[in-house]
Image (cartoon, rainbow, N blue to C red; front, side, top):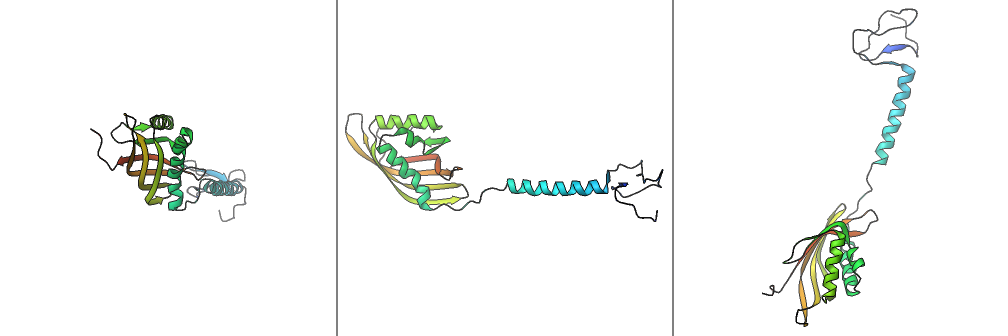
Length: 196
């Protein structure tokens, strides 16, 4: 057992124990649970495993996320206001994520982009126009952001009069893979008390 084992001989590597050679080869102890490999093969396996591990680590690293500016976050609401004023409900709905939810005042929640499109189509058909927004505060962490602000718009009352509706809004936004910010939750309320 004092002779070195040439590379390529089968050895027992867990734990390293060898029995006396039989027919010129070293054999592992058959009474222990062992992993048997040739040294050449184990070095190749280690090299391949290391390369795969490094490749996998590189593939799964997320894209670096930078904090959003107030300009980036408030752009969604400016785009939304422009779409409503142009009576373009598709563009208005595209300001929302597929799974977004609206919480309009004194109404049930509206979930999903198609339902949101229908909601804003109803608002436009009812006479909502001249929408303007003013950002008050924004913040972000990673790919999530928020915005609070004030809105103003003209709405038509059931008797046909045009009144100015003013209030506050809060939006929770996410950054899509294309870098565009879209709303995933929006809620607002009017400054004036609800009409009885």
